[in-house]
Image (tube, rainbow, N blue to C red; front, side, top):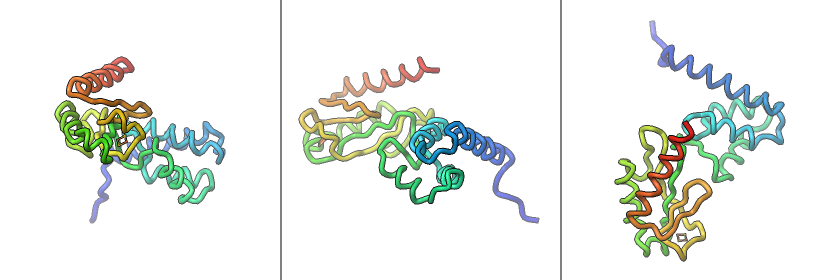
Amino acid sequence: MGCSKVTKDQAVGIIKGYEQVVAIINKYGKAKEQLLSILLDIQASSGKNYVAEEWAEVVACQLDLPITKVYDVLTFYAMFNIEPRGRYVIEICKSTPCQVAKADAVVALFEEALGIKLGETTPDNLFTLMHTSCVGACDIGPVAKIGDEVYGNLTAAKVAELVRSYRGVSSCQK
Ligand code: FES
């Protein structure tokens, strides 16, 4: 007899996740106009800073919206992720002015400070390191964006300080 690929623990996790998503949707009264807030709450409670495909489908179904509408929102707003990410996404500008200002060296500094490569997430799910295109701060390149904050004129000391301070903020919030 064949057996399911889903273990009991995974099944429990899926059911818990489903209940959590439905609770969030109910909290907003299943209101279509609350789609953004619903998706933000789901992302925040995911533990991996993203909205999984299956939860996007639950939202579409519960709000009686086409799934394409949910994905339009998820892909339009930069604050949403549809792949697992760390709590802090560090985006290093790779556009030409920042490249000239040695953005590659900044990538290497973050890689060393975090112990991961570009595109990866730290094992504690705190940081994801990525590239981005111009964020409009070319005069202070090389530049990194973390959430809504933009940090410029990055040096080895500033990178180390940034990583330290974001780690500190996170341990204070525990
Ligand atoms: S080129 Fe990097 S912020 Fe514009």
